[in-house]
Length: 202
Image (tube, helix red, strand yellow):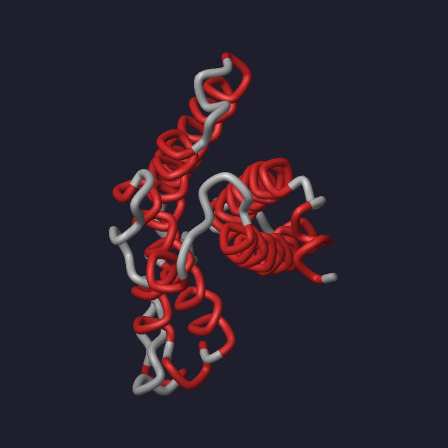
């Protein structure tokens, strides 16, 4: 009974749709995560970007997991559990498949570090969060190498657009942070160790 149901499932369509959807959700999450660090992003817009950054990353992980598990029941080229869990051991597209496996592991680390941010501290959390870049790059290459429809012009444009967008928003954020001048204050900057009565005004 169960085998009959599996045989009638459009597994190839399920694999491709879930894979592309997971990639686009990850792109959205990474883009929002970078954009919320731009100096102009303040108040409610920044809070909304942070909220949807977290939501889309979790949705990407969920769909990515579904995408991977569907490979087990694929009718054309099913994966074994070892091929699925151990990077670069797949008989089909070992490099691309291995990058996909590593990307899922990296994404899980990013998500868990976000939940443990207070315990890890900002600096440690930030280092883990930087894994978002190689995770995104790994899934971009994974999709281009393993997807049977990656040669289609629309798919190529999607990968080019998303890749350039992540590079562009990263460069823009860096430039804006670099151009942001120091905080302008009137008089000398007060320190915690300097009582107000002892300050000397210019």
